[in-house]
Length: 117
Image 1 (cartoon, rainbow, N blue to C red):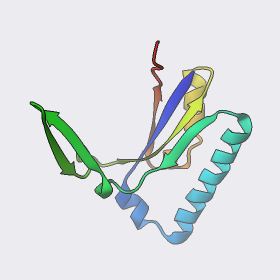
Image 2: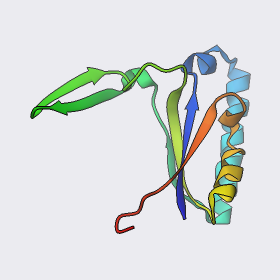
Image 3: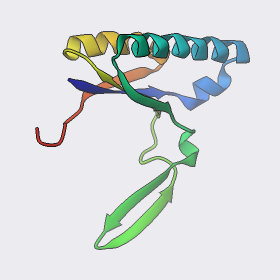
C-alpha cells in the first residue's frame, strides 16, 4: 500500500537553528532517504520551499482568486513529503517516526487513494 508522509514543522523553529543543527538534520535526511532507496520503499519525495512562496487558488462562482501564502495560518507548515510503499499503517508509521523532523515537528501519515480503488 502507498502512503504519503507529510512533514510539518515550524519554519520559525528551523530558522532559529544554528547552521550546525540544520546540517545535522539534513544529514539525517540523507541517511533516511538512502535507507528508503535501498529498501525499495521510496516512490518519491521532495523538500518544499518556505510557505511564503506559496500561492493558494480558489474558484468560486467560476472566478479564480489567488492568495499569496499558504491556505491557512498554522504553527507548523508543510515542509516536504515522501511517497512510500509499506505493508500497512503500522509499517508506515514506523517509517515516519524515523524522519528527522518528527523529533521537533510532526509527520502526517496518509494512505494514497489510488485511482480505481
